[in-house]
Amino acid sequence: MTFTSVPVKPETLKRLRNYKIAGESYDDVLNEFMDCHPPSEFWQEHLRRLHEEARVPWKDVKRRLQF
Image (cartoon, rainbow, N blue to C red; front, side, top):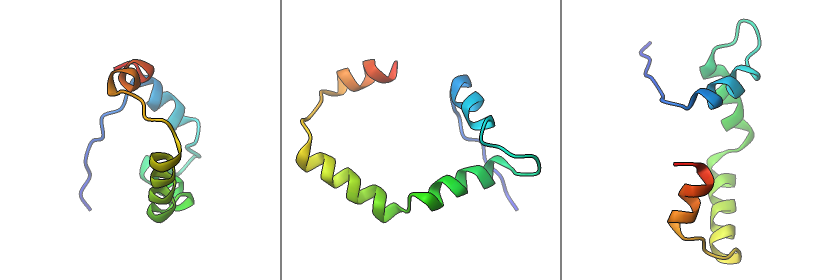
């Protein structure tokens, strides 16, 4: 099995650790999250937002996410 690194902010890693149960890997935790929100649901919600919600300029999104 091969592994890869996924860069995340320290705060994100701290939050992710709260979901990890002894014996589980981070891969297990992330797969559980993704299983709860299959891609089809994700894209349906994305499209709904595109059609129904006001557009937000990218600079405002970056500011909100602190990039």
